[in-house]
Image 1 (cartoon, rainbow, N blue to C red):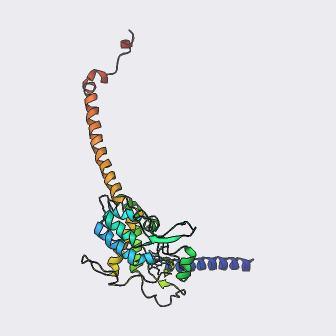
Image 2 (cartoon, rainbow, N blue to C red):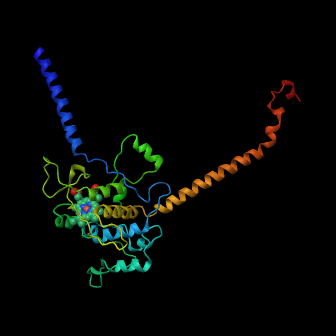
Length: 295
Ligand code: HEC
């Protein structure tokens, strides 16, 4: 009996110890939260900076688009208000530099032609299998909603604070963090083959080689040509790609707030006017004697 109990205690202890051990191992694998960045489009009055979106587009186009598709974006969107503010002619010229698959033609075959402004961005690979085969097994996610889809749980009390400050930029923070998060693996980390160490990627093993280095993309407006700046600009561009109507939404929200404030004021004064005489009648405040009802 005595033996039996000590065996039970020992096994409970062993279970507790091993689960804490696996928890700590899990915690070590968990990436830290991406640092919060300053974004022109955060907060209730935030707006996109068209110049930053143009730079971000340049980074996407010259670097990321060789692996990542942007299927939901059409070339025409580049000229939409509240976006990178290219002119229609510029958007059409950009479209013409891409090759788009069209067809079938009279002979039933698909063919390639230069893009038109009404086309969507063509994907770099015909399908997921082709992408995996070319990239050593890695599958680059489509970027149309990457900035909205990748969020992280900030935990209590930050999610409450965020509701008040309307902080909604965890997605771009994450993209910037991934771009700038490549470093040497710490001693003792066993890097799975075909992966690269990244501080902010879950498990720290990402199948994307570091895509950028300083000076890689030429900026013409004097903005620093650093990985940090490229990451910032491309993250802003991808935020716009996943939420192109953000400027409009914020402007509308603001107008609705102003309207509600003015409307409450009007209601208040209307109420005062309508009830003006009634409130001045002290007789009504007095309880009536029962005889008054007997007419
Ligand atoms: C050589 C191909 C290649 C290029 C170029 C490339 N990527 Fe990737 N990227 C990948 C692959 C493959 C993955 C998937 C990694 C994984 O699942 O381990 C990925 C994943 C990512 C992720 C993480 C997505 C997630 O699921 O959380 C981000 C963010 C990202 N890429 C951003 C970029 C940006 C921004 C650029 C351009 C500056 C870029 N990538 C250029 C191949 C590429």
